[in-house]
Image (cartoon, one colour):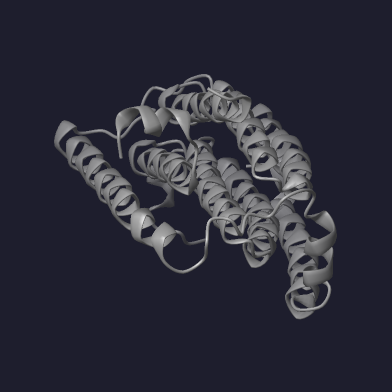
Length: 177
Length: 108
C-alpha cells in the first residue's frame, strides 16, 4: 500500500465520520465542529488531487468563514432546549431514510457500472494533470470565464447588502417585542 | 474488479463513491433534521460533495473547467449561507426558535 492510497483512505474515513457526525449529533455546536472537520478533510482531498489553490480557498472560505458564521449565529441563539432534533413520526422517518438509502444505492451502482466504460474509451487516464495547477486555473479563469467572474463579484455585493438588510430589518437581534 | 485491487489502487471511482456517500449523508440531514441551522449545514455538506466530484473529474480528465466550476460553487455557497443565516436571524427574532415548523407559511 503506497502513501497516497493510505492517505486517500485515511481522509475518506475522516471526511465520512465528520459528515455523519454533522447530521447525527443533536447539539448544533458539535454539528458545526464536525462540519469544520469535514471541510478540512475535503480540502486535504483536494490536495491529493493536485488542486492546491482550491484547497486553500476551501480552508479559508469553508473551514474559516462559513464555520465561524455558523458558530456566531448559534451563539446568538439560545438553543439549549432543543428536544425535537429529528423529524417526528416513525413512518415518515423510515420513508425518508428509505429514499436516502435507495438514492445511495443508485448512485454507487451507477458509478461502479459507468467508470469502467469511461476509462476504456474517451479520455485516457494518462491525461492526469500533474504538478501545480494554480497558474492554469488563473489563466482559464481570467480569459474564458471572465464574465462569470465579474457576475460573481456583482452577486457578492448584492448578497452582502441583502444580508445586512434582512438581518437589520425591524431592529436586528435586539428588537423590542 | 478483484477486491484486493479495490483497496490498493485509488482511481476516479473511489473519489466519486466518496462524494456520492457524502452527498447522500447531506441529503439525509436535510430530510431528517428539524433545526434549520443544521439543515443549512447539511446543504453545505452536499455542495462540498459535488465539489469533490468536480475536482476528481478535472484531475482525471486533464481539464481545468471543473476547478473553475468549483470556484464558482464555493462563492455561491458562501453567499447562500450568509443570506440563509440572515433569514434565520429574522425568524428567530419572531419565534425565539429556529425549528422548521415556523417556516411553513413564509410570510411577514
